Image (tube, rainbow, N blue to C red):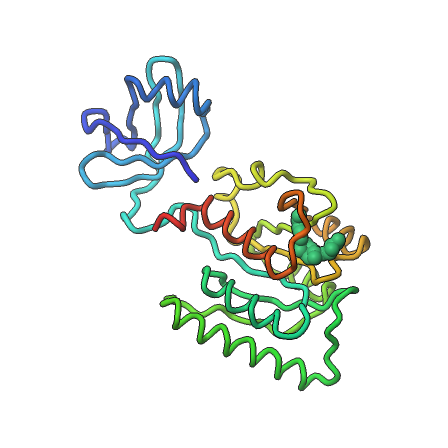
Length: 257
Ligand code: SAM
């Protein structure tokens, strides 16, 4: 997650929106964490206030920071809505995927038909029926897990339709496609707080039992979606979303709440 430091009250200069770090923390920040100017951190001033700050200069003796905004204690710095774009899995597995992602805080679930999805909707009514079934599961799981919001289960769409909607939405989203064959982006690089901070939302693209086809991976990459690996083993489709969601929530500091 994002680094947090305690500032000596005497080093706080609120009206000029500045503060300083001196003493032993400087070595840790400079030599161990190797933070540099431009990095965002959160600071507490020892008087019950917490700020989002950015390092303006750093040398072996002192770190100068600019206070960007005061944060209420409860706000989680990096929390961003996470949406699951899920290759439609067979049978009751989708029920399980909807329930578990809901418990863990997913913001929306977009069931997606891909080249290798086995499930085919015979009529549009069948797709609507499935969507309502999954939304009901999301409603119930939200109550059980005492969520303050209920995730939206979107109507099933094809991969191309979801990509097109992504092009149309003005929102800046970090879109990650979990791909067991190659992971162009290392998770660690993608999850840096400085990277996460610039996005309004995050999307997790998870393939169905048969995975994404090479063409689909290419289409996704052309649309700016980044592939990430989730370790050396092949996870079931229902496992993969929970692994990635857990990692994202931890990195955003949400699991500390
Ligand atoms: N190609 C896989 C195989 O060889 O069995 C089939 C897909 S896997 C069962 C289902 C989905 O989970 C994949 O499309 C991918 O999104 C995700 N997944 C599974 N293991 C993964 C891993 N090690 N790294 C990244 N994604 C993984």
